[in-house]
Each structure stands twice: as structure tokens, then as C-alpha cells.
Image 1 (tube, rainbow, N blue to C red):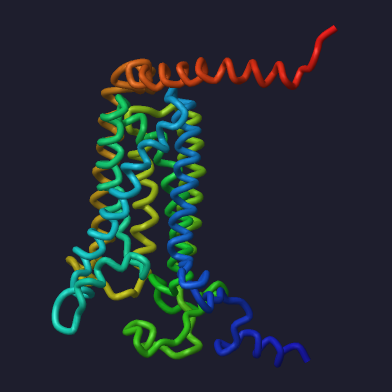
Image 2 (cartoon, rainbow, N blue to C red):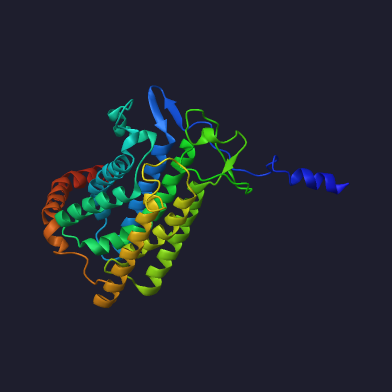
Length: 328
């Protein structure tokens, strides 16, 4: 009696488990659209700043400095991520029957991680120079949080039903709504499931985060080696995950591999070389994380705060006398 039931359960037409995709990725608060993709990115940025702040203070930095640098890094990173995407997939925005203005529509998705990292570092460098902070220890403090931010960001791809992998019959296959306007999805039947590459990368990034934190605590890494390990760990996962993806990209076949696979290979090698060089040149961890004493940066602000306290002191004493009442 059990054999017919087993046949049904093993039938490829029956999926006992799968990952559904959200029915929508945008909600409206009156006339204002609330986009899940943007919320995921914002959540990742907030976490990265929070964790980076804690790690920076533990390394000898001052509270609030990471938040100050974020004012530079976040806009630079967003611009860099969009530029990388548009440059490597310019055919989506330029040419016959294309509208170049849509290259500015960031909310539709399309942020290249390496452009975001590259210009984000430029932003950190500018802010660090302004505040008298050494760049490498700051990058080491920020790197683990960036991995978690990227994990958050991948859920935006889930809401947008984009960047999925090739078809699969695995029980955790991803459901993607049929869409005749989607040149990739329309090639497959309505019941086909796909590799959830967004989930693979999310889990990989979280595992890499745990490994990075452990290595940093175990070996007291410094002089940019945490940042180098971040690049190595991330690219090691991005390479094979990228190989699973079937989304249309302009540079889909560069010597037999997608551009982002080659990018991962090259960056892994460069990061490994930097790690080896840094380990030989600068063993251990920096004892000083600033290029000039913090007092030089904050002297004016400290004087302002002292003046504010002095100005408020008479009023505070008057308030205390009023509330204290007569004394015996």
C-alpha cells in the first residue's frame, strides 16, 4: 500500500518543499512607495555602522567616528555600486528603444558590489583623512559588518525576484512567478524551480562573518589583513554562486566565464598576496589607529561643550533650589 504513495512523493511533478517568492516588494504609505529592496539595504548599512562602531572603539578609536565616516562612505558606495552595474550592463540603459534616464532608477535594483566597495573605500579614505584616522585599521573594523550588510541586501533580490540560479529539483528550489516580459524566466515552464542564489550568498556571507570574527579574535589581525580576508572569503563564495546564476548580463562569456567570476578570481589572488605581504611586513596589530591625537580634532568641540555646561550651570542651580524647598 505504501509503494503508490512513494511513487507520488518521488514524482518530479510534486514539490513537497520549496521557497516561495513574495507576491510584492513595494508597499505604499499614502503616495510614498516603501520598497523592500531599499529597506534591506538600509538595514544592512545600519548594522554595519553599529558593528563597525563597536569594533572601532575596541581598537582604540573614538565613539561616533564610524558614523561620521559613514556620511562619506554610504553615498560614495551607492554611486559606485550603481556605476559598476551600469558600466558592465550598459545595454540595459543605452541603445535603441532604451531610456538612459532609467540608469538612475536605483530602486529597481542593480548595484554592483565591487563598485560599491571601491568607491565606498574612497569615501572612508576621505573621511579618515579629515578626522586624522589611519585607513587600514578602520577598514579592518568595518569589514565584518560589511559581510552582514551584504547578507541583508540579498533579501532585496528575493523581494524583487531577481538574480536567481539555474533550474533545480532540489527541495529548497525557489519559486519565481512566470513573466513573459522576463527574457530568462519566460524560457521555463510555470512549475520550474530555481536555485535560490540569494539565499546561498546570504548564508555564505554569514558563515564568512563568523569565520572572520573568530580569526580576528584568535590572531589579533591588523594592518588591513581583516579586510583582505573579507575579500578572500567573499570572493571564494561569490565565484561558485555566480556560476549558478542565469540572469542576463552583458559580459556573460569572458573566456568561458562570467565577468564577475573572473573578478572574484582576480580579487581573491590580489587579496591573498596583500595578506601575505602584510603578514611579513607588519606582524601583529596596530597600537595607534590615528595619524594625529584625538585632542587636536576635538579641542574646539570640547571647548564648546564646556562653554555650554558653564552657561547652563546657573540655570540648573536655580532649578535645584526651587525644587529642593526650604532647608531646616
